[in-house]
Image (cartoon, rainbow, N blue to C red; front, side, top):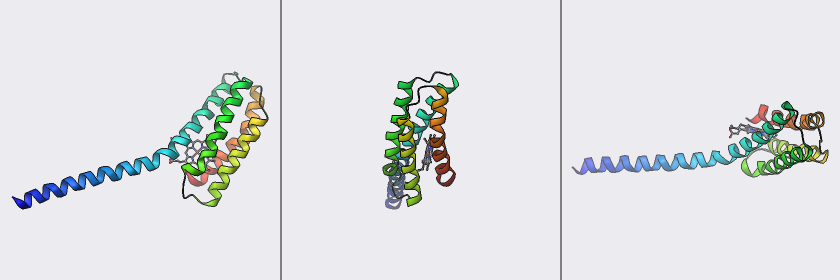
Length: 129
Ligand code: HEC
């Protein structure tokens, strides 16, 4: 009887431990993914604007500034990453700042402004994703 109780107790502790570990793991992964999914969503909206030939200066700037702010969150969202990763995050921020400052008012200008930005996205993804 006592042995059976101990087995049940051991199982319960094991299950609780597993649940806590899995929660900790998914929380750890949530922030970096959330940052990238949000970044991707803004990039996608700009893509849709170009596709539909609806590139309005105010909306373009709004999206680019959002992306710039999200880029500033990358270092904190990916703790423990190496210096080259941090440099790429910095380059993305600069590329987005330049794109914002160019204030693209039509689709060709927007597409041109996004080119150096996309370059940094794919450079980092090739190495770290
Ligand atoms: C400094 C490095 C770096 C830069 C720059 C970067 N990313 Fe990422 N991105 C990552 C890493 C690392 C992952 C994988 C994250 C994970 O799965 O936890 C990722 C994943 C993603 C994902 C997939 C998210 C998912 O899990 O569904 C999208 C979308 C994305 N990035 C969009 C972008 C866009 C758009 C840009 C440029 C505007 C960009 N990223 C720039 C490092 C970067």
